[in-house]
Image (cartoon, rainbow, N blue to C red):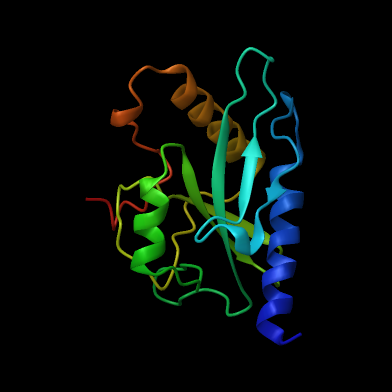
Length: 165
């Protein structure tokens, strides 16, 4: 196994830990993520919300891990996502997200993959760290998506404002 594979697998494990942490006031928000692996291009995980049984809201995630740290000028995480993966994420009729993992610091950041921008990037904004506050916002956003009759007008709050169309 080469170093890139080790970093990638560690990043996926870090994502699992971060997304399944207990929220201080709301409890567990997300069920254990299901790894899809190489079976789906651009999608690594399927994640369900803990919710009543009448509706099971879910979302898809692509995890990108790095040990390269951050850009100096604007402190963006050095992970790459290509144009075709961003277009593919935007094509799913469900909420999709890119999770950037700083493998050394064991920190993650979330960015929408729902088509606000369908061009690839070489660094990910760090405006939305996977902390309890952001995880609660994610739960609320995904639940709102699945309970709204207006899926076509969905716009995520987890956007890179520098890249938004």
